[in-house]
Length: 73
Image (cartoon, rainbow, N blue to C red):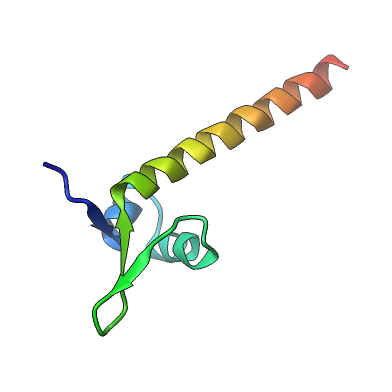
């Protein structure tokens, strides 16, 4: 069974981004996360990461569709 919550390090490995980029996604609210414990350690629910990835795919499809429409005009 996969863990429900991921660490920032897990997110950066899955997305193949730097720790700064992963933290920026969380701080901006693009990737919803919670802080746990007294030291405010970030945890990202696996389903939220999957939803973020799907939103990025949708945005890429929309952008590609707009590019095609502009080229056809």
